[in-house]
Image (tube, rainbow, N blue to C red; front, side, top):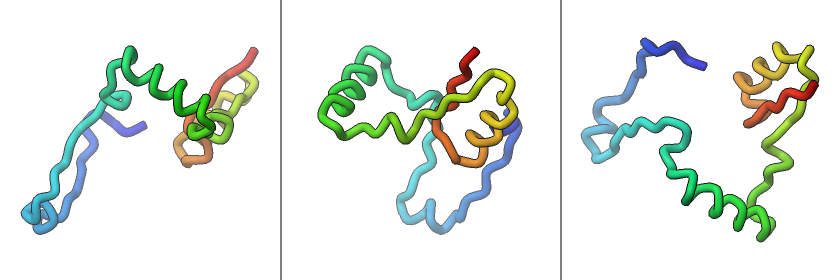
Length: 80
């Protein structure tokens, strides 16, 4: 997770070519729209949730956080 005061660097010339920078929080989607869409993709075999989620016992919380930060998993789920 980055600090709230993190600084972003950008190539100004790329921005002048028509590129934009857009912020987003939690995917910036309405849950009523996003969840049914994800469920439809999953049912169609097009949403690989099994490759995105990894479970960790609670005592491995530090490993879970490290794996998320390193990009080894998208969603770490802690179990008792």
